[in-house]
Length: 167
Image (cartoon, rainbow, N blue to C red):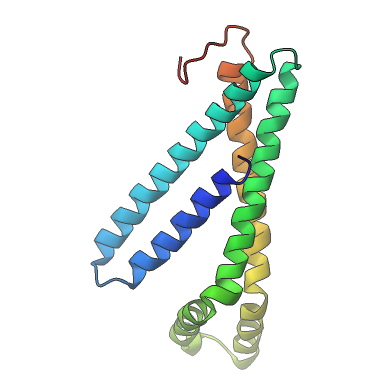
């Protein structure tokens, strides 16, 4: 359960990357990526709601704050899985793809850079997977924690829980 949200986000990352390699227009890729992101975000929020509500119904004797702690724990482990998959994708699975994209950016900016700036940007590519890992971990954990707090305080903290998924 805790890893399902991270797996959904990871699958969306790979689908989006695959779509960018197809011979589609930039508008179509952007539109498809945006729709996938919206579906992923809505799906993850609904799954978080479902799991938190299911936990609250199965363990009614637990304190309500335990349900909130479950949501935060799910957010952390999902963020950890997604960040690890992002790290592995950038560092190992698609290293050539990201290196080529970065080199293209570096070449387009080369006329405006001096030699020390170019050297610094070249070193930057070496730590890019770690930067992505920690920034994704922080962002996804904060997003998941805020989402679980909103879900908890708006619907689960009340005492009138029912077995329907949505009120």
